[in-house]
Image 1 (cartoon, rainbow, N blue to C red):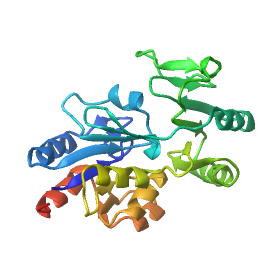
Image 2 (cartoon, one colour):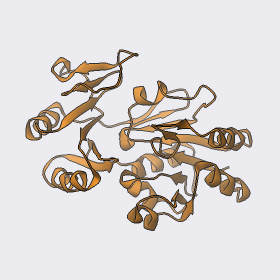
Image 3 (cartoon, rainbow, N blue to C red):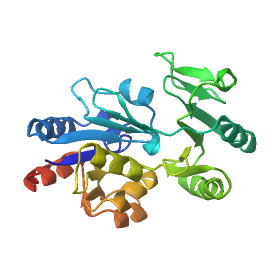
Length: 249
């Protein structure tokens, strides 16, 4: 049995074009042959299920960069939250950034996003109650260079781990990453062999470096390509490779 953990944005789902039909078909065939497929993303659960193709039935969800992990029935496997005091410090320190705070059910914003909130999941930051678990925080900037510089500062001064993702910075509780999420899934399924993973950007570096079976695209940034075991042009090409080299366990 092979297990594949896929990044979402820029790997499986594309902002301009949505899903590639060949990727959907490859995932379905992969699962039909007894393999497991799931997400490993910086997005919260609400940011996945409202964009999920109805044909996809993930076997697991690694969300908020490893801070929140669910099985295929969306039952919690692991959860690590950010203290409200840390969140308040971050928001107060970076008032020049648009910031979103992710919880189980809602996304709280300091500057309202431009997209239409058809599902009612967006709420003003001042409405965030003290008893609500904070799973992740994102700071939205203009480019990766600016984001990389700011992420270094956050990692050095706050009780958070920060990962750059397409010009934004995804922050989670200290000790969480996409790699720790993948290792939790390996434990959940009782695997001794590595979980395969695929991603396209800087926030995928922990899982690409941590897995012996990692994939990224030929079009990915050079540091991301250097971290991966294999280069492909699509998720479907990655799936084809895994099925051709299927493990017996």
